[in-house]
Length: 497
Image 1: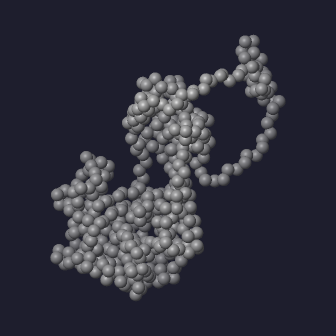
Image 2: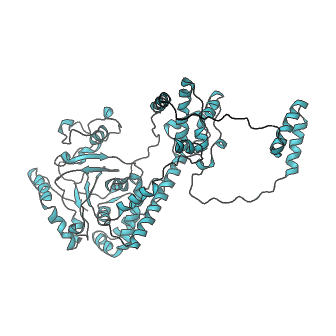
Image 3: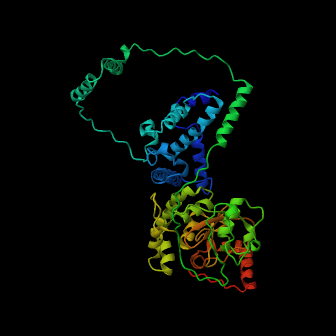
């Protein structure tokens, strides 16, 4: 109770947690492959995580500047949209919903939002509503209006014409009637000489009551439930086009038919094709509704042989970074870590430039430079076409950098990519990152169990070293099971890289 009362009367801008250091420590440990790491590698990871956080903050700032959320389209916010952060507008929307609760319960405003966050509280918002006025930007603390990470610069001292300004004030006051003139002079003198003002702060009786009664606590909980139930659903009106890139591959015969559905709920989801009904899906029956909807949209890119092992299909933001967002999800991070994934892959390419040049340029001259250019993108705005994910070449770098197995599902046929120069026995755990390519978009798919593994990528088979050859031996049975499926169904497994 004491901590809550103290934080609500201190300008903390909603930062009430003290475990951020521990959470970042946990985040760092997820990037380390083993408990023993050199100081140089540890410092490098810390630096890259900080850079990823900086990119994330810049992305949030850019979002507040260019995007308009649906629940922010209120006339009272006309002066604030695009000038303050989305978090501030969310707090104001939540505070607006408290007005009706306070009116019904005959409650008073505690001014907590103003004292703790520097934003207009419910009573002030109510005044603007009653007078049909818009909240001015001057009522918002400067903390919420700084939408960039640049260091603040001191303003140069400006010369103020005090005599000229006071002359205008004197002229305006002299033009008023005597009663108004006297009142204005008192206000001016009170501002210039506050110690000589005859007004004193009102005496406040101290509240010496102890802990609230059980009835008061229950009533407060009910009021909080009402406020929570009245919160409107938040949905963005911004939806850029989907972007990605993929190398052409020879399609296997009997390629699956794909039809995209943009519905976002199960009730509106439609089967992807008229020729393939819902009953022909082999996915597990106990899927969550949001996963089932993604199955309707993206499921045809997964062979029926592998469908029973799918436990989740997650869509990501289609901003040109969708491939790297899907990889971040597959590694266990939030999709907003796409910039960190790009940084790691650039570091891998630059640190092992000669081996990668030999591998990629042997197939296609200058493909190394093209691949590096597709990865090299750290800006906030959506990535242009030349920076979309370039598969399966990027998959080889992902597998080697993060020590994972990469599986790619597409119309041209699925494939498996192992680390090029890392032995399977040297890794304590074998994690898998699986993505589905949809022509101009990537999504992440999670598989579970001993499912058949698609054919190994031919670039890996040709250029992997002797130490990495044990990957095929470790997964021999699962690779052979997939090959038997192709033979039984008379499918041609042809991958053109």
